[in-house]
Amino acid sequence: MREILLLTYRSIILFAVSLILVRFMGKRTIAQLSPFDLIVIIIMGSAIAIPLEDGKIKLIYGIVPVVVMSALNYGLSVIITKNRKIENFLQGTSTVLVRDGEVIIRNMKKERITMADLLILLREKNIANINEIEEATIEPNGKLSIIKKKEMQSVTPKDLGIWSNQGIFPTLIVDRGEVVQNNFDKVGVGIDQVLTELNKKGIKDLSEIKSAWIDEEGNMSIDRMSEDTGTYENTKH
Image (cartoon, rainbow, N blue to C red; front, top):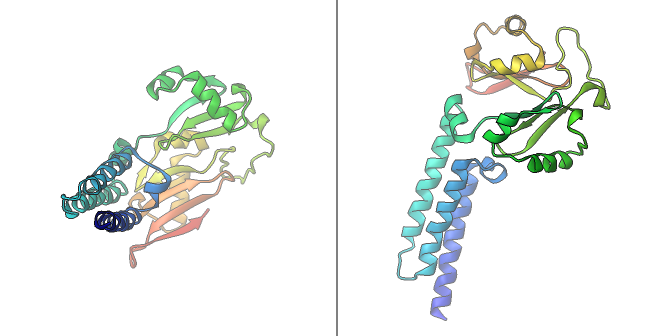
C-alpha cells in the first residue's frame, strides 16, 4: 500500500511539473510540433518515466532533465522569432509540390512524399483533379495549402486597384525587417509599390517592421514596432 501511495505521489508531482512547463513553452508546442519540439517531448517522457519505474531514484532526477529541455525549447523559440535563418533551419520551409496543374517531382522527392500521399492530401481538401490547382504547397507543419486556378474558384477575388492578391491566401512580404523576395512574384507586387505605401504610413526603413503581408483581398497589413512600448501595432492598406 505504501508503494502505491508513493507512486501516486510521484506521478502527481511529475504530471504537475510537466503540465506547467508545457504551458510555459507555449501553444506552438501543442498545436504545431517542430522537429525540436518532438525531440523535447520524447526526452521529457523518458525522463519522467525513470523515477516512476524505480522508486529508489530520487524524484529530482526526473524533474531536472524536464526543466532543462523546457528551458532549451523556450530559448530557441525566442531566438527563432528574431532570426529567420535559424527558424528555417529548425522548423523547415514551405515547398511547392504542384504549380499550374503540374507536379514538381524533384520537390516531391525532396520532401519524401509519394504520389499516393499527395492524392490523399488533395482528397482531404476536396480536390478531385490536379489540373484544378494553381499552386499546392506543403507547409513546415506538414499541412497542404492549396490555391485553385481562377476558373475553378467559386468567388472571384476583389481587385482593389493598386494591387490584387489574385486569390492567394495571406502572403508574407516582409519578415523581421527583411524582404521575402519569393513571395513578391506570387502577389504581383513590386518592392517600390510597397515602399511607397510604407512611406505614406511614416515608415522610412524596413527595420521598423516586424512583418507585413497581403491578404486575399489585396489589403496590406503591417505589424510595426512601437518605439515607446516595444509592442506591435496593426494597420491596413
